[in-house]
Image (cartoon, rainbow, N blue to C red; front, side, top):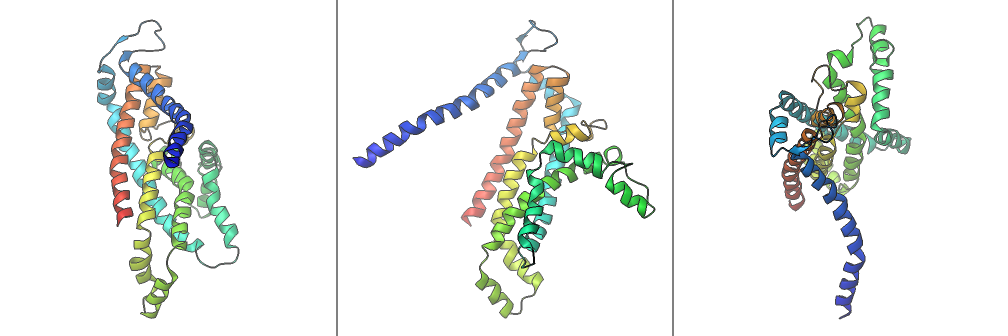
Amino acid sequence: MATQQTRTLGRVLIAPAVALLFVWMIVPLAMTIYFSLQYKNLLNPGEESFAGLDNFTYFLTDPAFITALINTLVLVGSVLLITIVLGTFVALLMNMPIYGRNIVRLMVIAPFFVMPTVSALVWKNLLMHPVSGLFAWLMSSVGLEPIDWFTNYPMLAVILIVAWQWLPFASLILLTALQSLDEEQKEAAEMDGAGAVSKFIYLTLPHLARPITVVILIETIFLLTVFAEIFVTTGGGPGLQTTNLAFLIYQAALLQFDVGSASAGGLVAVVIANILAFFLVRIVGRNLEA
């Protein structure tokens, strides 16, 4: 009886929070669905009308959509590859018993707490600037021609900026996993004559399988919405070379003032994100069950 009363009381206490969260999610989604079915442009107030699926057709048949989708996948895949590979390497280094290890860990993790806009400005003006940037000075010092990153290699520049921001996150998760590795297994492997490479391939890497899948899942969710770095550095250009889905929706909403098309694009992006999340969650679930 007491248990039933406790459960009932718990449901009553948590109900307001659940209701607030439900409204917080449903109201914006309902408004987005409504606007996606309307011809609504802020430049033509009072001329709204029912559009049906025309906004979705317009957005999906826009030549920029395929380019933005490819750019999004390239950005997400490249950043995941860089952060996982380098994150594993950095985690291994931070797990070594070196002097000042805590300070090193703090310095490695620090970039994750820098706002995307600030880090994009730092990379654009202090590091990658073709005239006064650090990279330009280093290349000029050895007699090489400085690179105009945001003109010649815009997508690579954006990938490096975003990867720099997310590398600390991957390193921290993988470092935590390394610290839970059984010391007895490592000692047994050393007694059997296993070298550093063999221990990494057959002992460390399998142990990191689960945290790597978690890193992939979490990073993918956030990388699909990368916007500030592109807006600050390249503005989606040159042309459409760095335009991803998030920036394409921004252009429709705040540059073309086409609320209907932007809402349809937002729903398309939500569907794509949920499809990717579905498969990633299945992968994570299988690794956790293994």
